[in-house]
Amino acid sequence: MDLAAPAGAPKLNADAPWDAFDPHAYIDRNYRELLDVDAEIIAYVRDHFSDHFRGHFERPVLGIDVGAGANLYPALSMLPWCKEITQLELSRANVEYLREQRVNFDPGWDSFWRVLREGPAYRDIDENRRARFADAVRVERGNLFDLVRRPAHWAIGTMFFVAESMSDSHAEFRRGVACFMRALAPGAPFAAAFMARSTGYDVGDEHFPACDVDELQVHQSLRPYAGKVAVLGLKKPTDMVRPGHEGMILALGHRNSVVHF
Ligand SMILES: C[S@@+](CC[C@H](N)C(=O)[O-])C[C@H]1O[C@@H](n2cnc3c(N)ncnc32)[C@H](O)[C@@H]1O
View 1 (cartoon, rainbow, N blue to C red):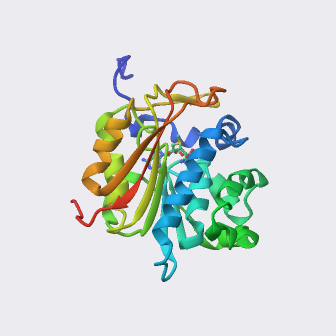
View 2: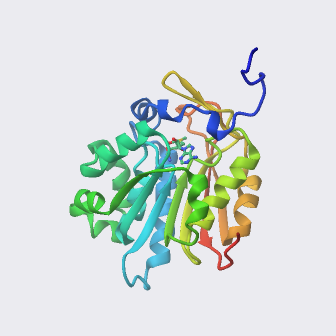
View 3: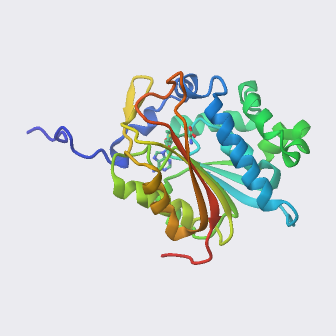
């Protein structure tokens, strides 16, 4: 009897080979060099978090980067204000990569840091950034869907290319966004990035599923959990480093005060 899923059947999060995700192949494809679109995203995120904390930063807070994978810049973007940053990640291979990077991150991430350093809060910790990062980061192997057990826990959060890049199910996309948002405390600033209209992606020899979303669907998924949210469509990188999509979507906002269960 053939128990394989029929062609065209939805590929759910639990079906994809996350432990076979090759972080080095992923970096080679996406983050070996700083692309203009990432520089644009980083600048928006830097300004959003800086605006939030300017003038009312009392004490360092807890931050979370959900589905951190092999990307350090979301965690770096929270560094000036965090005493602890949880990098939550499901894949064993990515967890191993993140644990190595925590101690002394690769010089390749410095070109991403240089965009952050244009903000004064980042400049203030420039010389100590590696020690600060090593001190703050906690790499946690876990499933984003389990964040429902830790509501309103984190005071700042990021989730980059995860909810739409972990299955081809729109229901799981919405659930992923909801789990991320519910984990944030009322008023917490957040940044979330999404591939626009993705058809899935290859990392090394493995194929991973994605869910085809546009700006409106991103906005609709966030609106119940965010007071104000800006959703920005960003151009597709001209060099096609990430094929199979139509650009990127960045959402910036604050968790609203209503905790939804
Ligand atoms: C496309 S990658 C994005 C990685 C990184 N955030 C970035 O900005 O490039 C998707 C990531 O989500 C992780 N992931 C997939 N399903 C997950 C789940 N249920 N819980 C936590 N992480 C998950 C994958 O292992 C992978 O690292």
